[in-house]
Amino acid sequence: MATNNEGKCCDAVLRIIEEQHHAKRVDVVRDTATQRGVEVTCTIGGQHYALEHTLIEPFPENQKDNIEFSKIFDEPFEAHVRDLLKADLVYEVHVDVYAFAGMKVKELSAARQALIAWLRATLPSLPVPSEYPQTSIHGDRPEAPVRVRLSCHRSKALGGRLLPGRVAPAELETLRRTRLKKALQDKSPKLHAAKLPGTRTVLVLENADIAVTNASIVGQVIDHLAQAAAYIPDNIFLVDTGTQNRFYVTQVRCNGKVCLIVGREAGHWEFEAAALSEI
Image (tube, rainbow, N blue to C red; front, side, top):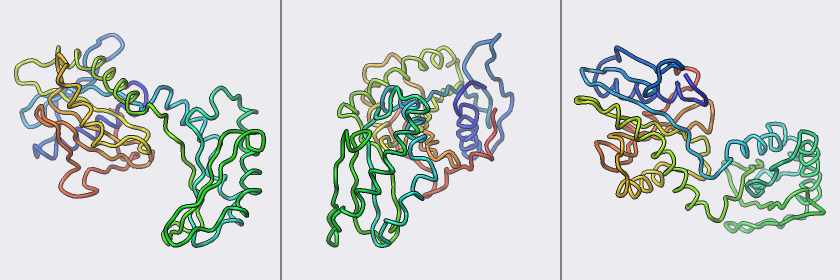
């Protein structure tokens, strides 16, 4: 199928629907370059379904920002400062969204090394917090390659770790609403056209950034947008793919009404990404 995790996200949702019907999907039809339509149609337990998938982003260029961020804070990054981390403290290093926008490969590599150098120079002077409060130090050019905040607090579970993160845009909620509105405008007409008698429509929203987006917020925003929308799909599922290895599914709209369903219990609608099919 197309880009992103489209096939695997649809497969995860169809597995949930199969479980609900106690039946397997049949008559699966996928759109192709020569025969365009909704991305997946099939029948499960005598019920016909039409599915569309789309990737939502909490802010524009989120995926690009994810890539640039991961080139800086890659897996070996923490090892360069581990000798300076205290075992009873968890450390967090935050940069702004778009902090590395426009940097070429060599510039990203240089920024990474400069951040490591800044952390090694700054960590020893970070005040040790009391039992609960957090303490922090801020850096900016020229001593740091980008604006950065280093903080720490006490933690038994995560002691001795350095956790990177990003500061979301101040207008995040407005941007989120805009992105969800666009997703509905792009996908709802196709699903509406596919809603023949006896067909249930399903919108599968893929969320690759669980740090600033959660299912409850998505459901509430969609419910608000639904008041002015010409058509809203019958069922809407959110698939969190931010961890890459595991997909987490939440239903945020059921039979035309807002909901928040994660299965029978916590972990029920979790899937190993490698076990899902690219239908």
